[in-house]
Amino acid sequence: MRRALDLLYGAALWLSAACILLIATLVGLQVVGRITDAALQLVGLPRGGFVILSLSEISGYLFAAASFLALAATLRSGAHIRVTMLLDNLPARARSVVEAATLAFGALASAFGTWYVGAYALESLRFGEVSPGLVRVPLVWPQAAMAAGAALLTIAFLDELVTTLRTGRPSFRAAEDAIAHGREG
Image (cartoon, rainbow, N blue to C red; front, side):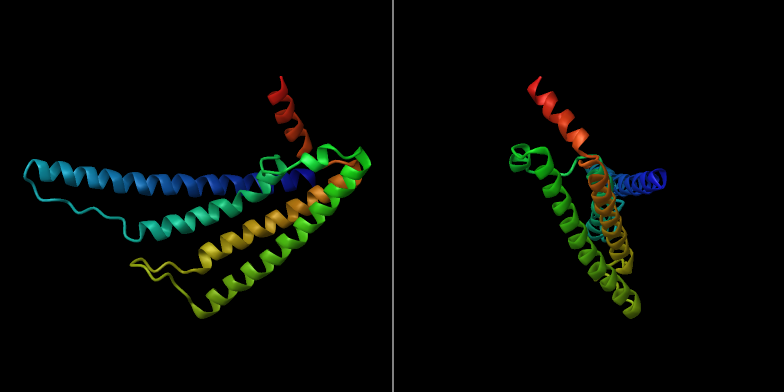
């Protein structure tokens, strides 16, 4: 089960990276198009007029997908920002209880968000909603990516909760401890 979950988190992280790479590629192509047009104009030739239609909208959708798809893997790796001033000053048992409670709350909040984002995506699918830009993107695509990322985050919270209940500490604490010791050393 551990291997399957780690593969799932890793696959979502790779999809997130692919979304970021696609944004960079599209923006890079647009920049090259503008530079080419400026160079053509400088030498008196007609501009090519290369434009990626709805670039800002498409980039926004890809960024939302990338952000949500990366949530589970970043939670597991300890990359989420946590304020641990209170936790660092608690006895081990109390810290474990507080961490388990916050992970349970995170799982509930994430499940709530997953439910509503998923319902919104299904509604967009049912009504065939598309973006208002020149390129009519079916809104269910970015919404489904967000729902998938939120669902994975819910699973990751539950995964960490089970780990914390079994061992007394979440798996991401090792990464946090390494960072803390790196700052001290």
